Length: 277
Ligand SMILES: NC(=O)c1ccc[n+]([C@@H]2O[C@H](COP(=O)([O-])OP(=O)(O)OC[C@H]3O[C@@H](n4cnc5c(N)ncnc54)[C@H](O)[C@@H]3O)[C@@H](O)[C@H]2O)c1
Image 1 (cartoon, protein in one colour):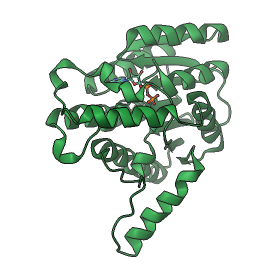
Image 2 (cartoon, helix red, strand yellow; image 1 turned 180 degrees about the horizontal axis):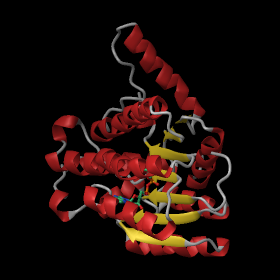
Image 3 (cartoon, helix red, strand yellow; image 1 turned 90 degrees about the vertical axis):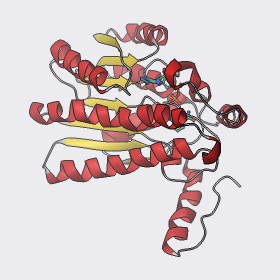
Image 4 (cartoon, protein in one colour; image 1 turned 180 degrees about the vertical axis):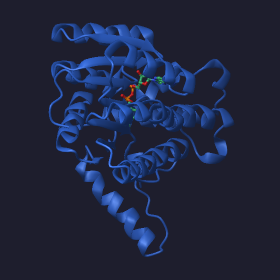
C-alpha cells in the first residue's frame, strides 16, 4: 500500500511500545488514526503525541480478548471515518516459565490477548474491508517467538506461532478471494518496551500465576533492556514493509540463523536446537 495520506489506520495496544510508535508514524503520514488499548491513561498520552500532525483521531478503550469490544471498535471506526485501510493487530502480553509451572490463567490470559485478539481483529475488520473494496492491509504482530521455540516462553511461543500461521493462512485466503488486502506479520526479537511488565494490565480474574514466573520475567526484562533497536525503529521498518507489500517483517536479521537451524532440524528430523543456549 503506497499512498497512505488520508487513509484510516487502526492500532490495538497503542498506549505503549510499538503501537504508540506506529500511531505516531501513521499520523505523520497524514492518516486518520484510531488508537485502542486497555490502558486509557497511556492511550491519552499517545493521542497527545499525535496532535502535532493535526490529523483526525479517535481513541477507544478496548480489550482485544473480548470479541464484542473489538466489534464495537470496528463499528465506531466505520461510523466515524467510513473506512479502515491499515489494521495493526498489535496488542500483546507475555507470561513465562516452564510449561509444567504455568497456570491455566497464564494460558487463558496470554492466548486471549495474543491469539484471540488477532482473531477478533480479523473477524471484525476484514469483512468490512472486503465490502469497502479499497486497497487495505493487515499487520499482525507476532514475534521471533512465533518462528522459534524458546524455553520458558512456551505460552508466549504458542500464542505467537498461532499468529504467524494465522497470518499465512489469511494471506492465502485473501489471494484466493482476489481481495485487495495485503497481510504482513511482524516478528521482532527483544526490544525495550513495556512487554516485560505486561502483568500491569492483567485482569484480576486471570491473575493466578506461578512463583517461578517472576524469575523468568526478570530475564525477559533484562533481555529487552539490552535490545539494540528501539520501538520507533521497529515501527519504521513495519511501515516500510507495508509500503513495499512485504509479508514477513524480520527486524533482527541475526535471528535468521536460529530460524534456519529450526527449519533444518525439522527437515532432517533431528532433535530441536535450543535458540537460547
Ligand atoms: N518488545 C519486544 O521485545 C517484543 C518482541 C516481539 C514481539 N513483541 C510484541 O509486540 C507487541 C507490542 O508489545 P510491546 O513490546 O510494544 O509492549 P508494550 O507493553 O509496550 O505494549 C503492549 C500494549 O498492549 C496493551 N494491551 C495489553 N493487554 C491488552 C488487551 N487485553 N487489550 C488491548 N490492549 C492490551 C498494553 O496496555 C500496551 O499498551 C505485542 O504483541 C508483543 O507480544 C514485543
